[in-house]
Image (cartoon, rainbow, N blue to C red; front, side, top):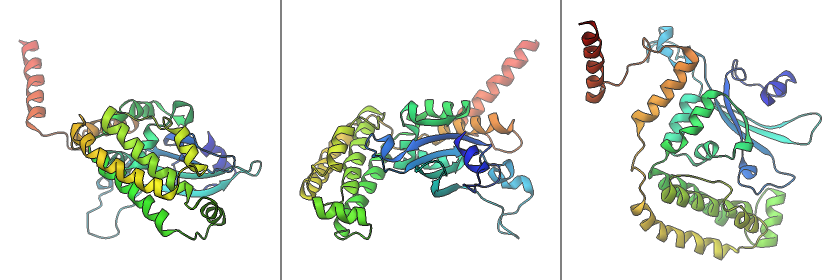
Length: 297
């Protein structure tokens, strides 16, 4: 696996156990959107299962607010990793599965995208990761509109603020096209993605790649990008109202999938995690007990 090769070559310094417990790794960035160039860095996102005492710090006897705080792990990042035999640069972001699920449940655009990459861009996926990818649509809800729109707005702000870029390549692009084409294509990409999510409850990251390539070539002016943003914002009011997605994430369902994954890795969590105490769950438990009793009599 790529991570193991890089670690053996001492080119990455991940936390102890991350490489061996990495469950999912997929290519992201411009490659995943079908607009990469020969000089593009390779962005890789994924998740791992941390040691049990980090996922469940109460098992160490730690008392919240007393003494040294328990060790935490949310994400490991390392950028501009380069093999000696290649000019390719790698950028890594690997999350704890708990943090990964949380951000996906919040419809963070980057992490939602990482669940919907094309199968041929998945570098590593254990059965656990395959299970999560199969359930990826269950993370989607109407909150995606606010998240994706917020990210698109941030890209618009960068376009308008960076009339002179400190990055030589970016400065050259601005001088040539009058707009930072990388930020511009991200604006259109994010709006296109959230439209798919709202209308279809699904996401194909490469669907609009020809349009995005054209924007990267400078085929849309700054005024056209701004007009596109304003028009989509108005259109999406109706799209949002018509969407059949739930308004909020099904936290209980997503939690159930997370616990399923953790149990597959750690074994039974019965002594570690409080199970669902809802009325429906209690009724199901009572029915199980009654069924056992009936079998005996």
